[in-house]
Length: 336
Image (cartoon, rainbow, N blue to C red; front, side, top):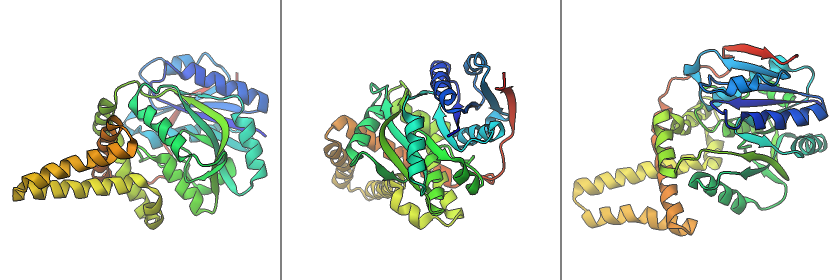
């Protein structure tokens, strides 16, 4: 039943103590380890983590390589280095608190379902003042059809069989600025595995506190948005694009927006002013009605445009072979 919890973090001084303590409490009961993979925090994240001598700490050697995929892969590499016969790995973000029943319930599920590579519980969004996480909570509730559901990815982390992960060759694609969970799920499914989300509290998530439009702009300027194109390019290279087209809604949204941009430009050049106004208003009306809120409709339109920008950004970014390990520095071995 032994499990290792791998925590990925970057500048999480406000939440890292709670994340570490929640992981330590459960691994102590189950006989496991906790590893922190830090992507080069400039705040007190590492100093706080050092207060827990039983936690192994590894840090990205080259901070210029940091991104979401690299953060998850770094935590995985640190977990493998610290592992001592564990059967399971739980990936946790540094701004999350692992809920008390999750590990035991997840291990029980995987023992009873040998065809599943991974399982996660329900995500409790703590910061619903931000429209981003308010929308996530609403969408999760709307999509949920049954207490236990087969899913194509485990957003916000989950419990994985280490044997299934080792068979993949790498955990997360180090090139991805976003959607690393989707890419991981697709690779596991391609190997014949299943993934599930069960009806137990999984994690409490403390997300960004900034407003919706500033967050969208930050994701464009930071490179995060490019994950849309990066994950498409990875699927093309690995021959998974046809299957991806069915499951990756962000790609469909991005393609629709690029076509919309082209139509707006054509209308502008042709002087079709009423057509142009209609084309500008139609997506707002459609998404506002679909979300049953003009505010959420406008935010959806902004995020769809972000994914369209990211599709073009990410498709042309250079890639490092994802099987190439990240260089890391061991800051604390966790044996104290």
